[in-house]
Length: 556
Image (cartoon, rainbow, N blue to C red):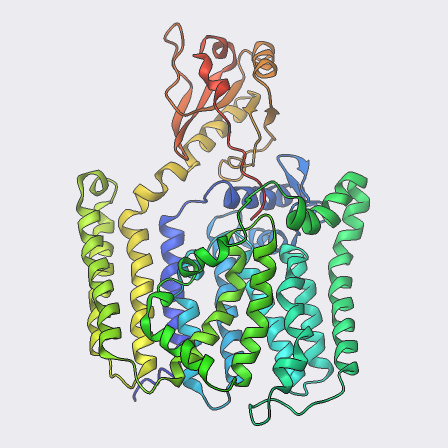
């Protein structure tokens, strides 16, 4: 029986998802500061059994809501603490989001399984979607709830009634419990713009004009439901944590991040400039641009109006925020993919030269992967057991190049599938082929295990500079580290705890005046992390305290 890509694209995307997830679990350590920090918050919840108040290094933590940590805790109670469970959890939300996208596309473009298939494959193979598959972060989880809310709005627009609005309310509430009030920004503009995308010009696929009072009333009720879900956690948590912690929950997670944040400060054009990276390789595929131009020239269908009402206001909103990161747009990737798929569907065919451009790109990437992995400075980092994976990834890239070049010109879905397979192979090759080189400086496992041994021996541990919890879960530490912010204060601490362990950072090697070695040293994020005995710290070269410590903000 012939495999129908149009109807079974989710199976193909699921195969790529499984390969990416296994590669992340096998090759990628928890990456500081974000992944290690969130794993530590979950670890302290698991150890304390306190599901209400989040903690980081023993202190109350109000920068993020609890849903991800609750779900991690549930899995750890069943399977025991591990890295694979949080990664699988994140990956499952990404896979679920793809299933929701398929339903949404089929609702917006009935009978056009080709559009649903292309939107699904484009999303699943976009660079940031692949990189965040399995990441212990909130973005794919938020994308799932955003898509759930967007699908609920589409169903409400088609007369879905109260079940559709209950879906919207639940999605808003769970989205807020995932990453805060930003979930509202992702969902509300689409619902507010319903008179434009749902009515539309005559003959454009929308519903006739209507009275909008009931629509906005139901939307208000859905927002109230979402707020009630979120407040069921936020109010008791704020009351338990006090006024300052309450302000952090209700203010810092929303207004401060939009207006007053000092982290990730970037100009308004930043997201526009980085959009091609978010959607790599698709904005470099010439046929996508031809398709988008075709959409502009034609009367806008329901799918196009819906996707524009979803993506454009949110994109503008994030661009106006003071602090911004490219992954903030991850929940919008399915909306961009709908536009790209709708444009490709309007093309009579994909030109041979466009397929050749993609084919040549994949061939070059496959050859480059083999060349880079064979370089002496990289080759020694690739285990002998991993080399077949490098060759396999390069072979898949070359095969994808052949398929892209030879794909039937009228079979747009097959061409998109070939490009998607090549994109997945590119990331898999990076994980398998050069993962040791990429992640060597981000693996805090060795120093974390050393600190765990120090705690087992009863030694107190001081951390110089702001601490993000990067060692806590990885080392399964049982007690918080003592955070010391000034050099004089740290030297005083070291004198009072001569047998204690002191964690300091430096960009150049540190030496002791008497030649005493450190207890431990390893590379860490482009610098060195040292563990010194308290009694020895005073004799260490003084530039350690002039080196800025890692002060990444919690703005992810």
